Image 1: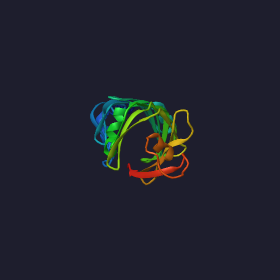
Image 2: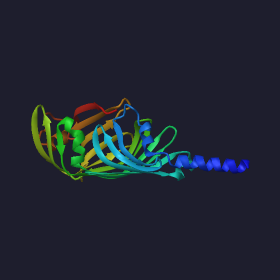
Image 3: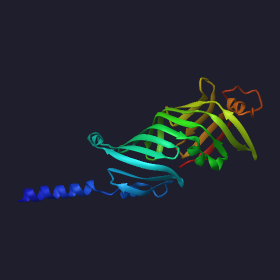
Image 4: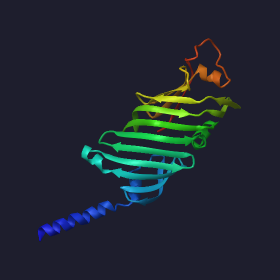
Length: 237
């Protein structure tokens, strides 16, 4: 009798766990994070919701748990983000002290422009993420690798109160080994842009003289093309 009650109790608890609603995902999102999940459907293990980042709608996020990661003492999910201008697949594996994220897919320039608007930058073309991997400790990226490519095209930006139009060639950015990236024009070896995410939550961007020449606004002086002639920092988290 006791065995039957124990087995029945375990089955009952198991059914409850399996049916944990997707809405509980919202409880795991820090209150100070610029991320929100709306209209969640399904369960904690397999569901979907509308993902907002910094108030911008990014598309429908779908998730499915990977039970095999339990054997490794970690929790893993397969994610897919589909929306206007975004088609991304990700694999997230969370441990006690770190989280690994692998992403592939594409996003359009129009999708990216929503985050570039505050900086008065507007671009076109499409971006491809070629198996980009990022390792986080808490919410801080500590390592990255992979490649990001951009098809290039028209670019509009504002500098010193004046609006400029330019056309950039196809570009690629190599990530890593730390939370850094270096961008080049396709087929060239002289860097155009350096980017790094610092542990204090600031992102640092360095523009080389070669990029200023490519934009038609050459930096004065005798610096070599690969030299960083303009550097800015922006707090991102």
